[in-house]
Length: 131
Image (tube, rainbow, N blue to C red; front, side):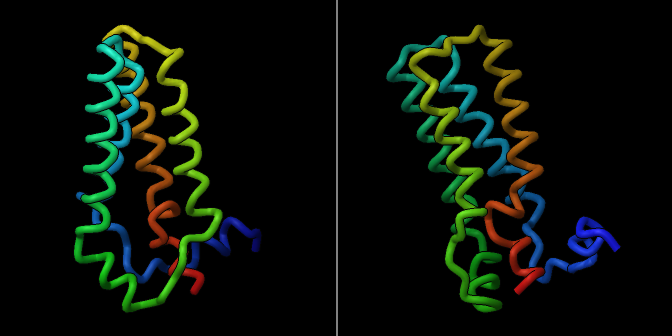
C-alpha cells in the first residue's frame, strides 16, 4: 500500500462543516480580489482586511472548533501555517499588482478554489485523523 492510500484511509473524526469551509474560502478569495483590484489603495486594503477578518471570525466562532479542542488539544504546526504564509505573501503583492475587475475576480475565484481544497489541512481537522 502506498503512502497516499494509507493517508486516505484515516477517517477525519470532526470534519470541517461545508458552510465554514466554503464561506472562509470565499472570503479568502474575496480578500485577494480586493487587494489586487484597481480600487484605491486604502479602499482595497480596508475591504481586503475586512474580508480576511470575517474569514477568521467565521472559522473560530463556529461550534466545531470547541469539538476539536475537546477531542484533542493541538497547537498549530508548521504545516497549518504554510497556507497562511502563502496567502500573506500573495497579499504582500498588493502594491505592485493592479488587475482589471475581471482579472481580480478570476484571481479571487482561483484563490477560493485553492483555499477550499487545502482548508482541512489549514484549520487542523485533517490533522485529527492522525492523532
